[in-house]
Length: 84
Length: 381
Image 1 (cartoon, rainbow over the protein chains, first blue to last red):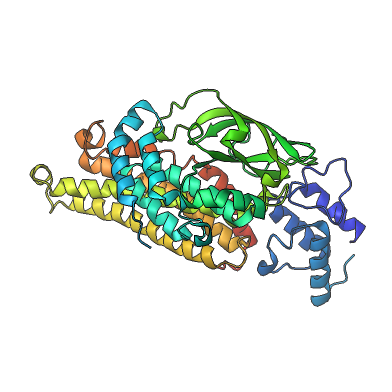
Image 2: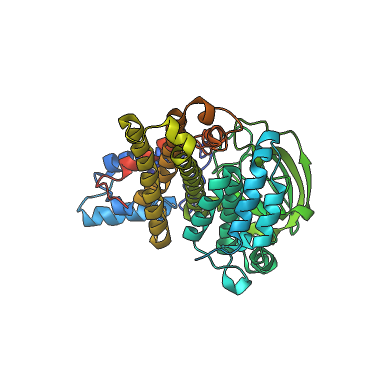
């Protein structure tokens, strides 16, 4: 997982203050809910210049930091975007 | 599916409901009839001695009960929500212990998911369960427990042992005989009075195998079973209550007294009746469609399915209450507002006023607003 990505996530995880966010951590456990999910989606799309298609917006995609990063990386490759 | 025994339960509810509403006492004779009917085992698979019923069967029975008494229907629907959760998520040992008795319809289960300060929020907890060896030590303050004084067992949400965030919530089964049960107050409510939803303190210890689903994993249970079963059950209950009210009003309008007082050619009367009926047909079709989607959806977490399941709850709450509000307007003071009318609209009106508050519509609108933004293509489930 891109370490910078973990910092992209942090503002949307209300229970992550003062602790590291690890790739295997459950984002739901760390406080991601549907109201924050839309803000996180905007942040991902702005940061990486990719578009997450509606059908990928499932609990599985947002399960862990690692899972979400793997979805972003795959979309970046498919959409021809160089991820920072 | 036909439901032998349902007529007896409905009859018991009809006998007991006025007094239960008056005194705010749990309808014990109706619960006894429910136990005797086997209907408490409706959702238990046939292999464990249950009826192997579907969510649609649960909705049908719930709506029939609600025509007589909405409190009884809610008690039944919430029990079914607990049973469906145990069937799907309990470990083998716990299933083997509970399902035969549940299948015989002997056990009545209550749910302990509210906590002080949470505003009904299901997914986080500040009520920790402590692990001591293989035991989980429970000490749970529960502000609202529907049927808590008469339940044989409870499903409780607790913060998982060793949880590092408030969202790591476990669902734990505890039998009444495993707990000390203290009733902390009474239930003085506007409506739904027979649910006797008292504040309680539950303490005791249970083996760790009585965690239902993964430790800390209640959220995925809510998405897959607990949430949908609640919304389906509530919607069926509210629809049944409003349908029963409309049926009694039509019976009255067609009676000798009704025909003296109401003109069936009145355009105002006909328009009002049409609007009430349309509200019920709207909720009914939404309920049937949601049942189909829930029974077939491979992933309940996708926004179109979540949106539909939540909209069923908010729309049913609003439309069923509004329908009864309009029925009160149609029949007027004597049969719409006074206690003691055989139409008992005033009781149904008070009962249905709870619908928008019972897991607050306002909370679900915020969730559904966010989910709507996530579904750019607007894929209607």
